[in-house]
Length: 136
Length: 414
Image (cartoon, rainbow over the protein chains, first blue to last red):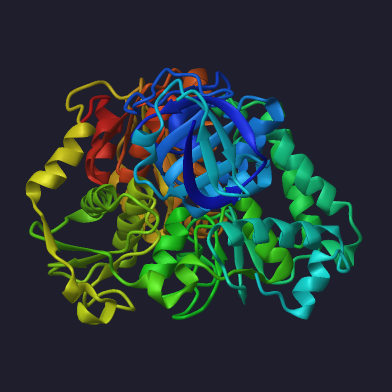
């Protein structure tokens, strides 16, 4: 197991499979929220399903819509299990708070998009600011 | 977070469930960003289009609207960002009754909360611009970056739920841009190629936003040789916020907090140059010269009365190509003036449509694109061409003059 420390975040403790890219995140700009896939052609995860995944991305991008959209996505169950960022922004944190979605940022050991690999099984404890890679 | 007596009372539910919800929401967010306490705000501005809120967001606000009047009314003046459905013109766009019904119900719920439906993302040009040092809770990234940068007000990006929480309580967690130290420059750019027109300013904003790339980056810009106007700053800021998620910039000698480079700490930063090649690279991403164009859009941000007048002048004596549509989005207050001044009639005489209180990208852009067969989209807004790629469009960027020429010839002029 590998234990990573981050800033305490928002939401419940969850486990899931990681989907990682050194790219940004905006629910409005990047997602087909009906199909549950990244839809912006330029996004590093274009075509990938985000449903139930622990998304690991660099930073929050785009506008304010994500603050409502995470809650709307949660209501339909088409949502990631958690989102980890190097740096979140206010909108994604507000969206996580409304949706009760797990979100953390600011990792002590450096770039989270290299610390965690796609396919890793991770547990996120936002209250403590702990992320555990369970398979390594 | 340290709470005052009234904040403790709100959190305990003594002032009703809506204010308890609001405090709980803001404490979660404030804790993530290490806010020490709350700061009082004078206005709130809420983004809440029906596509973003969905049935779940509608239900949340309708539940609040069922509480007694004393518990549900907002505590400070609260206004709204553009809607997603122009209730006077939605069926022709392919929007459904279901979409319109979410809109109608949400507007009714907002009325119960005492929210003024201004439906605008240019409130800083049309409603009540904040002043230097005023703490506010604004939504819409374009509104926030303009208010912070040009006017010197203090706001974080507040999504709809947080703006609503601020409206209900008259406060917001004190973090981010409410703090002096977060407003100092972190990147220094020297512009070597002067921007021209609204699209040129938008492209420059996009380049700086891309290079800055984070909510916590504050660019300071030198080398601007001509004092820009409000619409130019509007496109510049909206694009920067869209490409970079940046909420504040300084231009030395132009914006409120940067009379000098040193005033924002820029003298201690290494200078990065931005030249014609940077702008050309951005514009090349949205190049499509000679291609057929399905829809030309003026929006993001909504047009000021001055922009409406410019579009109307370019439309005089012209007609749209039969295979090309044109949509113009403005605020209800500008729409009323533009109607009175004959501008709406002159624009619509071409076959175009002026929409009131909406903005193209937050009005179910994917669904209306599919309903109308719109794929190739042209706009003078660097912001909207950034957004709409994810909605299935092939967006292209051109000046206002070239957009209207393209709409009339059916082929993209750049």
